[in-house]
Amino acid sequence: SQQGEEDPQALSIQEGENATMNCSYKTSINNLQWYRQNSGRGLVHLILIRSNEREKHSGRLRVTLDTSKKSSSLLITASRAADTASYFCATGSNNAGNMLTFGGGTRLMVKP
Amino acid sequence: GAGVSQSPSNKVTEKGKDVELRCDPISGHTALYWYRQSLGQGLEFLIYFQGNSAPDKSGLPSDRFSAERTGGSVSTLTIQRTQQEDSAVYLCASSLERNQPQHFGDGTRLSIL
Image (cartoon, each protein chain N blue to C red):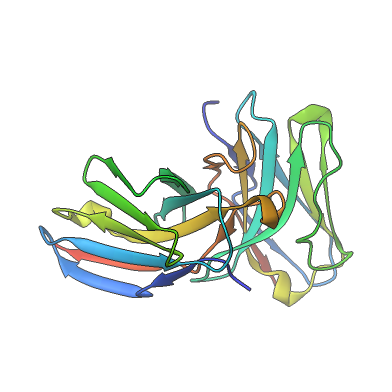
C-alpha cells in the first residue's frame, strides 16, 4: 500500500493563482520530500522537510508538515504555466527499509 | 555527465523476449534505485543498491526481474520472458545516501507487444 496519498489527484488553476496540494501518510517518518515530474521526464527533487521541522520555504514553494496529523502540504504561490506538472510526495522512514515511498501524485495544470 | 543517464529511452519488444535497461548514476552517489511507473500512476519501488552491501530486492515483482550494479556505478535491470503487464516506464535514481534527495533519470519507456 502507498505510504503517501496526495490530494487532490488533479488540480486546474489560472496563472497567478496559488496551488495547494496535500499529502497524507500512515507511519512515522524521518523526512518528507516533494518532487515534480514533467510529462515524459524523470522526477525532480523540490524540497525536503525533516520530521522535526514544521515549515520550509524555497522560492515560491512553501511546505508544511504536521506529524500529529501525518500530513504535509505543498503551496505554490503565484503559479505560472510552466508549473504545470505532476507533483509527488515521498516519505523516508527507518521502518520502511531503504527506499522512499511515493504517493500517486497530483496533476497540476496552470492555464495561461 | 552531470545527471543520471538511462538507456535506451524507449524499448519496444515482443512478449517473451528478455530486455536489459541501463542506468548510469551520478558519480559519487552510493545509493541507486530502480522504480516502475505505470501510466498516470505513482512510483513502484523495485530494488535498491547501497555501496557494496547486498541489494534490497524487496520490490521486485517476480523472479523474472533482476538487477546488477557493477563496480558500484552502472546498473542494469533485466526482465526475462517479458509479459504485457511489464509495459511501463522504468526510472532509475541515485542519491548520496538513502532517504536523501534522489536524482532521477528520464526513464526507459518499455512497451511489450
